[in-house]
Length: 475
Image 1 (cartoon, rainbow, N blue to C red):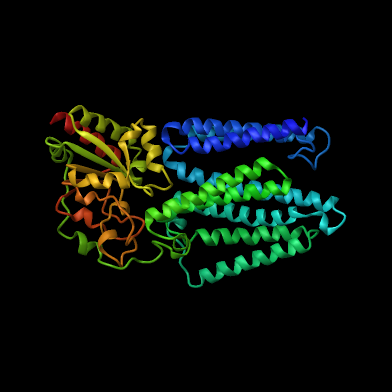
Image 2 (cartoon, rainbow, N blue to C red):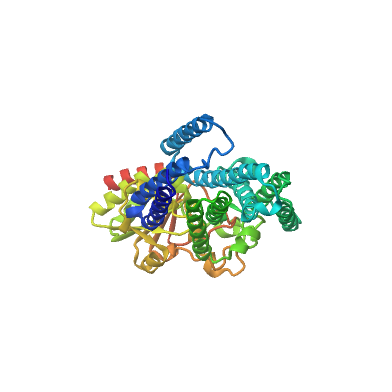
């Protein structure tokens, strides 16, 4: 294939990536954006396959490389299709973490292979040029991304040994030491490109750094961490593009890297915290100061059943549903949609209040509700819905905790002090559906559960909604 056709293919793929990002900015066009992005990636892969010398098989002779590439493409496509079909919506945050990690791993392996080839064909140190600097950057960022993503996956999957963040004296000094060591190894590699083993030493040390940076971070901060790791994977891909001199990798990686950083800023703003505080503050890593659960809840929590709660809707004009991670765990989104449809049939306005960091990844609640075909115009962002809570008759909280905790407004010493929350406590009546009074990721009790206008409904989210639907129909 001529260079003109290759450049045209890469340009087309890059344009499709840009349009795809624009389309995915809104739920109505997100599916189309995904299709365009996938088409752009397919074009880029086909073009790279025909580029001479072959990008993916420079070290092979004859047709062996081609066969290996085709088999790898088939295997990867089969695994991707299986994951897309089988993975439940509740596991999407974990899958995003893994996909970020695999992107970083692919980048560092490509850079490592290219370095091995370059060492064999270069006759003098200055023959490496920018390639060796990009290789060092790819190794560092790719290794941090891969192992940091694996740690994030384990935390999101709630494996017992990963549930609580690591908190030990000197962890920041240890991370700083590892970071300095990676830079020294990168300098060694750049100064002596022929010492290819320096690259793999760099990868090993950067891998340890990735784990050490991620493990101390609490589950409440996982949406920000997912965004950051996504950005890292994009930067690693862009760096590997410089390694193999592939423009579409540079463009696509830059888009992913920039979008991840922007999303990080949005998430941090939603939590009223800086990125530095998220990475090194360790929300939930230490025992939270303040009143105990006994002090907050003792003798004040009112429990109710479906029949009592159904009576609240008799005179209600507006109901606001607040989804949280408990909704995802219970897979109750379809039942919630059915309940909303039932209430709407009785002339009640139903809205959904979406907090930016509700769930385990950005847009988690939007994705769940969209899966249940909830109309997009009923999903209201925090700034839009908060002014409506004082005029809301019933607010139903399904599995959310920290994002509706009023101590964020009232207690300056709280771990979530200053964090923008959904003002659920201002509704006339509040129904909180939870299995227990267990705290959220911030590790603090929630006074909303003991408020005068709150009734607790202790049950699995899906069962609670189904029982409530039956009670509303019978009322």
